[in-house]
Image 1 (cartoon, rainbow, N blue to C red):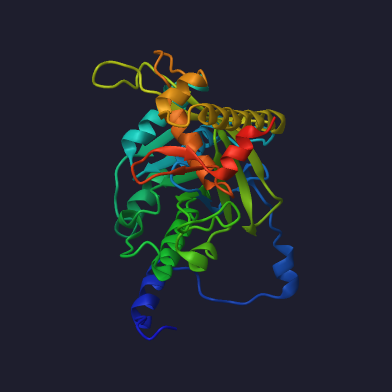
Image 2 (image 1 turned 90 degrees about the vertical axis):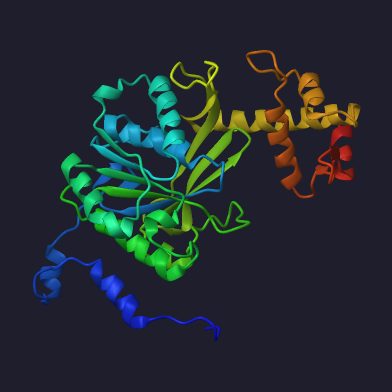
Length: 364
C-alpha cells in the first residue's frame, strides 16, 4: 500500500456494521439441513435479471444507459416480453437522481413509441438528488409501499447519492454497493439496477464500473453497454456475471414528441433505443459502416469542406431540411478512434483525412 494511503479501520467497520440489520442469534446447521433448504431462482427478466440481485449497467457518457434502462423498466412494469426473454410483471421504482429533466424526456418518447398509457403503469419515480447514506430508509419505505420488483438507480454513480467524497474511492464504492444490497431485502425482494460510468479510457473489453473490484465484488453481475453509430450492444461481463451470457441489441432512433418542445414550440428530437433481433442489429451495423465509407469518400472529393458541406454531399438532412452536421460529427469522432485513425482534427478544429483515410477512400 502506498505510504500516503491510510484507512481508519474502526470508522470503516462502524460504517459497514451500520448497514446490517439486526437478525436472529447466530446458529449453525448440519450439511444435510443446509442442503434441504433448496434455492429456487426467480427471474424478473428471464436469464437476464434475477429477483433480489444487484446489477451494474456500465457504459460511457453517451452510450445510452438511461435510454436502455427506461424501456427495460417499462417492459417489467407492464409484463411485456423483453425480446425473447419473458418478464415477470411488477411495480418499478426509478431513482432519477442525476438529471430528472432528461429522464422525463426519455420516458415521454418511450411511452409514445411503446404505445403506453402512463396512468396504467405501476411505476414510481423519485425525481431528485439525495444522499443515499442519509436517506436509505426513506427510499426503502417507497420500495416497500410500491411493492417494487425492480429498482433502477440512475445517478451516474453520483457522489450525492453514494455519500462518497471521491467517486473512485474503493471503500466508499463498496459501502454504496452494500446500501444497494439493503434495498433487495425489502419484502418483495426487488432487483436493483445501478447505472454506472466506467473507468477513464475504458474499451469495449474493459467496461468496469468506477470504484474498482471493491464495488464489483459486491454486486451479482455487471452489464456492459457499447454504442457504435446507431448500433448499441448490451452484454454481460464475462468476468462478473452469475448465469448464462446475455447479449441484447438496440438501434438508436431520434424520436419527436408533442410534449418535448423548446421555448419556441418546436419539437426536440430525443434518443430512443429500440430492442432488435440479431439479424436487424447486423443490418444496422452494415449500414453504419456504409455511412462511414460514404463520408470518407465525400471528404476525399472536398478536402477543404466543412461538416455542413459533407452532410449535403451525403444527402443527410433533418426533417426541416437542414444539413445533419450532428451526424457528420458523430461519424468523424468514430473514425478518429479506429486504429489507425482515418480522420484527424487540427488545433483550429478542421477535420481532414489521414493517410490511412485517403487509402480507405480510394478503395473501389
